[in-house]
Amino acid sequence: MYSNLVPLEEGQGDADRARPTDARRRDAATGRGYELLRADVLSGKFAPGEVLLETVLAQSYGLSRTPVREALGRLEQDGFLERGTRGYRVRSGTPQDVLDIYEARSALEAEAAGAAATRRTDLELASLLHIHDRACASDDPEMTRRLNSEWHAALWRASHNRTIQTLLGKLVTQLRIYDRGPHESAGDLAKTRTEHAKVLAALTSRDPDYARRAITDHLARARELRLAAFARNAAGSTG
Image (cartoon, rainbow, N blue to C red; front, side, top):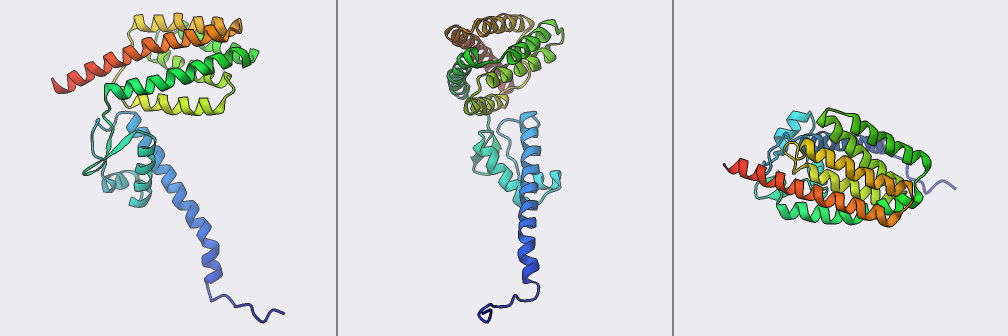
């Protein structure tokens, strides 16, 4: 009955069992390389247009070149890097890139705000109000900016649309590579608080149309601020 079975060669069974472990190790190394490199790109460690060399990155992160190469490819897909003649480089971006991202973000976040107005729970509204109150009470501009980002993320969650939430997260992260310092003054942050309050009023009254208009107006002003900051940074780098 078992005469047609071919016996395993010595060590073959061990090798087969080892393959999944090796694959997991490679995946873990690639994941680690991706997270480290992504954090460095978003923190501004690398200048716009700077070429990223596999050998240098591998040595810096204590990894082999293969996971670094795969991490670079993933970051290109994320929109943070682009291919040049000498390899991958940090995207320097253009004003049109900022406009394109905001066009997509405005459309998606308007839908998120409208959906949140009808789908939000009392707990989610309370969370949004609490974050807003903390931002209003803060006298630290950097803390206020972080709370404002947290507020937007909470708004997306309140839409109960995971696809929109995921896409918005990617778009907002892409915008960060164009930031070279704060782009909002104290007066701009005060306007943000007023605009957020209008969105909250729409969510409280469950008015989806007003929620869409309020968030669209808010993002239109934020777009102009970012474009102005982009122009200042570009002028400063060439001056």
